[in-house]
Amino acid sequence: MTSGFIAPAELRQRWQRLNQWLQAHRSFWQPVPFTTPRPDWLEHYPELAEWLAGLSDDLCQSYGADMETLGRALVPWWPAMAEREGLLAWPQLADGDASLPEGQARDVPGRKRLQAGAFASAVLPLEAPVLDWCCGKGHLARTLSVHAPQPVAGFEWDEALVVDGNRLAVKAGRGVQLQCQDVMAGSLVLPGGIHGVALHACGELHRQLLRQGAAQGAVRLSISPCCYHLGHAGDYRPLSRQVTTAPDACQVSFSSLRLVVQETVTAPARVRGLRRQTEIWRLGFDALQRHLRACDDYLPVPSHPTALNHRGFADFCDWAARTKGLTIPPQWDPAHWLAAGEARQRQLRRHELVRHLFRRPLECWLVLDYALFLQEQGYQVRLGTFCDRRLTPRNLLLDAHR
Image (cartoon, rainbow, N blue to C red):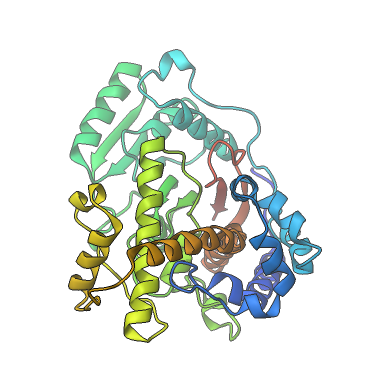
């Protein structure tokens, strides 16, 4: 039997400590820097604001890729950052590497092969019938089949992936059977006594496994969540009774759910340049529209036609103004507002550093809610990481036994 179960009292205490810390600092993570040029924390932490403003672009980029180093660097101006690492400390659940040998996984992307292997290592031994939830082509299912006492099943809504996954399973000689299934269907019936596994099922898909697995008697659920905002609208609705009824529970908005998975993504230089241009143009127009409307509120603008990318800032502003029913005076100065956009973009990068410090704490808050929910349903739970964040930043694993 797998050890390391967390006592109910300890789990609730961990959630309470994290919730209190997040509540105390909600003015840092609730405002969205793109839409809020001057969040309230600037007035209360002037030395922090000054330190951020003085960061070089290179150092800003370096800190953006290393939140732990950033948090430690900020302690002199922001003592609460000294608590951050302790709140995020979780045990490593994987023991070894159960990845398929490369020769047997030629159709599996290298990073996905290692992620599946680390996940498998963390959930061994397997005893109950395994169901791979939202399985795609069944890469995890084939990895687990090596260690499963009986064939591994998989649910996936995309028929083309199911066909390809079953072909790969036959080719590899694995005991895997994938089937086309919409897991969000109201009529969904799970096989009896299953061990449900989900590696990076998104948002409502992994929450559906938690709800349906608990309701339909799954004996074990092992889930590494991802993309908490997908399939969801509005503020987050906690799963556990304890979080739902807690009078001081954080209100986690849709934008905060999205924040959890906003990681730095490496893209080709051309794509990065276009992304930066678009951001500067939008911020420049935002400054302009606040001036035109004499109103310091954000005005959302839809995605612009691709053809505008090859024109100029002035044309972009003309299009955006028409779209929002605004009139730009004939003698306006595009260079002035473009410079305002460039200044806002530099400021945005530094304000985002502060907000991104709360990505992992918010993720832990969400997964602790999941864990409390499963304890309320009669499960014993483990919670930890199954791989290094360099392999995937979504490395939390919730493992529940009934």
